[in-house]
Image (cartoon, rainbow, N blue to C red; front, side):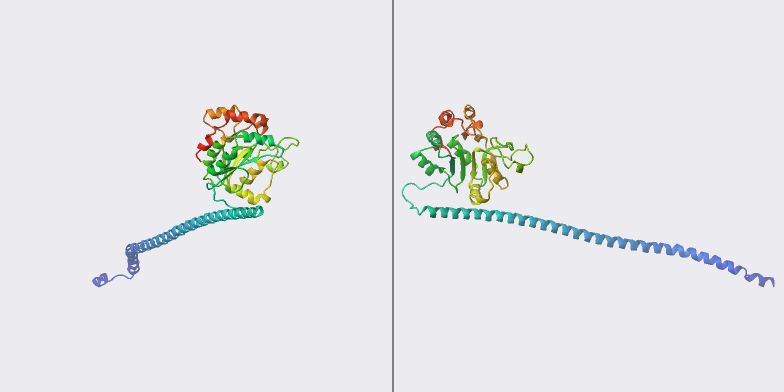
Length: 344
């Protein structure tokens, strides 16, 4: 009886064994499945990282392509803008030349038909035109100019045909030079100076200055429109002094065409500077056009800095020009052969 009872498991131990086996099962389950789940998570994370990397690389590639395309578009716009500006300038130049040709034709028709002579040497294309400002009452001054630096007679005709230097008012040549009869000009030095700037289509050459704007009345060089230049005490913009200056053909043509609408100030040199300050003109400060009368022009000539012209600043020309013009020419003037030997 005892042996049979000892071989049987009591019902009290069954719940205990069930709980123990349950916990053992839990332990084995966690041990084998947790690594599997973690591995799955790692694989999933790696896939996400790869996908994000692919997307980011694609976005960067698109951005780079978009940036390159944007740069190319801007370059094309810039080139187009430059081409339009160049075309505008070409059209403006053609319009100016056309208007100048029309005016020259009208002038020729008004003056009557002229007969072209085949005799004599062919006329050289004008290189420089010198305009001398004078007045009907200034005959003595004109005679002084003729007796000093301005060629006369056969030499004058030879100068025009061989050197292309015309001493008279004219539009439509390589250079137009404004000159006042109260000064001495050294034509060979002047021609050589202008020849250095021959290739510049819109050159504005002179002794550049910037003087005060005079608002007071009853003073020399009073500016009635002083208020346009800012506050009282301001200076003019840089411009060539009115005694002598040179402008190229394009600028002379521009003035000829637009003369009716170009505003004129009290002082001529200020007006000219105002017309050019808004243009694509090259301002050239030529100090050889800033020479005074002897001994200033003598010293500069001895130092190798020959002057283009000579005048007294206090008189805006040569003081007592009729009496002094010949003396200045003798002291600072050029030899007779200098003009013909000048390289233009």
